[in-house]
Image 1 (cartoon, helix red, strand yellow):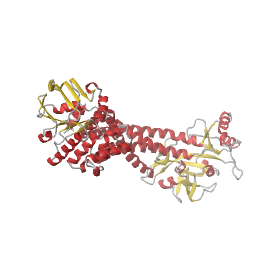
Image 2 (tube, rainbow over the protein chains, first blue to last red):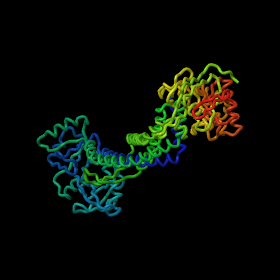
Image 3 (cartoon, one colour):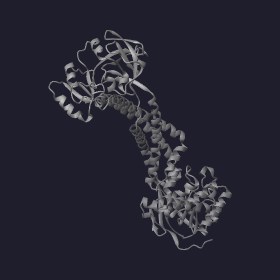
Image 4 (cartoon, each protein chain N blue to C red):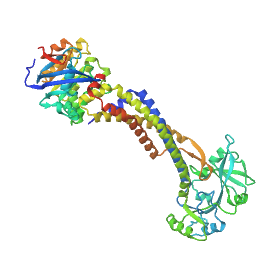
Amino acid sequence: MGIPYSYSFRNLWTRRLTTLLTASGMGLVVFVFAATLMLAEGLQQTLVATGSPDNVMVLRKSSNSEVQSAVERDQAALIESQPEVAVGPDGKPLLAKELVVLINLKKRAGDKPANVVIRGVSAASLELRPAVHLKEGRMPRPGSVEVIAGESIARRFKGCGLGETLRFGMRDWRVVGVFDAGATGFSSEIWGDSDQMMQAFRRQVYSSVIFRMRNSSQFEPFKARVEGDPRLTVEAKRETRYYLDQSESMARFLRILGMVLTVVFSIGAVIGATITMYAAVANRVGEIGTLRALGFQRVSILTAFIMEALLLGLCGGILGVGAASFMQLITISTMNWASFSELAFSFTLTFGILWKSLVFSVVMGFVGGMLPAVRAARMNIVTALRAG
Amino acid sequence: MAEPSAPIVTIRNLSKSYRRGNQVLPVLSDISFDIARGEFVALMGPSGSGKSTLLNLIAGIDSADRGSIKVGGVEITTLSESELARWRAGNVGFIFQFYNLIPVLTAFENVELPLLLTTLKRRQRRDHVEAVLSVVGLSDRMDHYPSQLSGGQQQRVAIARAIVTDPEILVADEPTGDLDRASAEEILQLMDRLVCEFKKTVIMVTHDPRAAEKAHNVRHLEKGELSEAS
């Protein structure tokens, strides 16, 4: 058995102010690390939650998003006639032919303009998105110049609140309802009747066709068939896959940005930990000499000081993750680069981010504590006893 | 006073020098002597005479330039560093001038430290620690930290730590050097008890003639050379 862990722990506790200051520095880095991962996770979860695994999206081949896609009316009708399309209780196919357009709206705060997704929806659209619930007001009447706005849009954009009027597509649109779409991307959209929208925007084609499958396991054969059909120039994706692809580049960008920031900051934190641990070694030269004289091997001294540095790192990790967890209370909005529209999402802390952050903080402690621990372990016993 | 018997420490032609820059400073020159089992030896001499160096060499925490040191039949000058550490853990107890207790550990935990290097189970370690703390009269202070103890009490904890593994040899470097007269007397009586009652061999470096009076044998070191005084 080596030197007890309580020795390392209590030494940190004895120097609690130094420990706290060093751990705070490391905590700050862990905070940046965790927060960027939480940001990427929040973005990804919001977009992935937007999709449903039973739903299939049909887009024009090679389009990366609904904004770039165009599905001809005859092709949409052909898809509607496929046997895989589920049928609702009213006997109508659970399929929506939707139009997605971007318009520019001013934010309530600061008057800054931003792109917002306008979705022309069909009767089945709401049923296909169980996460979407009308919160206030009512649904737009078919054939009317009415829209409903996602909660996040209603709150943050001018003219989007219940009872307000929006101008786009050469018409004035009355907001007759506000819907809650939970933590999905639909919260950042405005919905209206698709036929009215197509007329207003002078569109002849839909952006996408979304339908629920009778049997989810038939997706692969369906995909192979429609993508191989010479009458169709479309590709089919599960809705969840589509939104995951949408989030991928942005999430990757956030993660890389986070890594770069973290690596730069962590150099400072590691130097801080090294200085603290060197001071710890310098203050305990006599103890090191005593322990070695009593018969503890060099490796025991090395382990005790590395353990202390790991604990220091862990303290920093707990501080950092603790602070980062409060970020979950914040909802931010940013440009979704895949659709060039505004997307609101929250920082999301997962178990994976938690352990990655703690491992990262412990690694910082290890790197910072290694040199001082080696110095402690290499001390000559007699010199250490005299110095102490 | 216990009667000295067969030597436990045999030193032959021991030399040690230190290097300061390009200068070589001889500390011990060709020293030979024996210490009998159960003997209480005091090493005296002026500062820089080499008495602490000699003590460190016998305790296996310093290495000789030349010569032989046999302790309990083991030639310790040929042992590797890790072998020496293992040997010290089982055969030598250390008593320092400034007690050298670990401030963040309680009296109990300080005494338990050397036992962590043995194969004893937790329960057995507890029994050993309680027994030695009782020997030094500190059973009621085992949960106290060093800062909550007086100098004399700290030194008694240090003595308990030195004897907890039941080593044959105790090396003490100025054990009363930091204590008032009353506490010093208590410590010397305790060390005398360790020799008489527990048959330990004690090698003590001291400047204090009153401390040296307790020893069976006082050896003087001067300029690295040894002479027997009594």
